[in-house]
Amino acid sequence: PSERFPTVALTSASSNGYTVTSSSSYADFAGFYNWRLYNRVVGGNDGWHTPHSLWSNSGATYNGAQSIGSYVGEWNKIKFPAQFVLQYLIITARPGYPTQAPKEWSIIGSNDDLNWTLLKNSIEKVPQSGINVQVNAGEAYTYFALVIHKTAGSDACSASELEYHGYVRVI
Image (tube, rainbow, N blue to C red):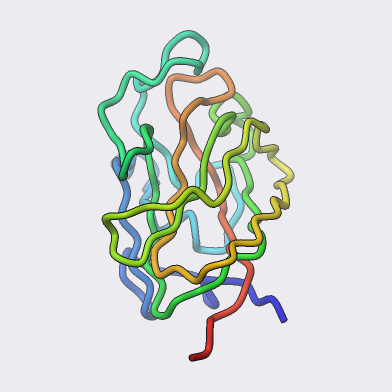
């Protein structure tokens, strides 16, 4: 059966066996720390927020210099305490800021934090009510990353919550 991961609300970048890192974070403003993408709180001033001025042309052109593996864009990565098979995810945009929502984005997986596999690429804008996205990864991974390629119109991107659903592979 599918379970929600992280299994508990994260309270720091390294908690309960999970470790969160990101290409950037707008933490100086209202505490948008990268780990707050996994704290089980959906709110206008909660979640992960990139700095401003990273996208132009109404969010269509990424001007930053970040990438993870060969995937270009701002990213938020989580290391799981054990290998995990991702079946689906639920991602929720930041309420009250629809133009900051991810519009083109990817989910990638890795077991060594060097070689990344594309698990899902989406060109669907993330709504403020959240969206359930089927992935059905055939392999188990230790690392997962959300990579933002385009926004829904802003020069910054934010997301309020990201849930991974699946199961830990038992060997």
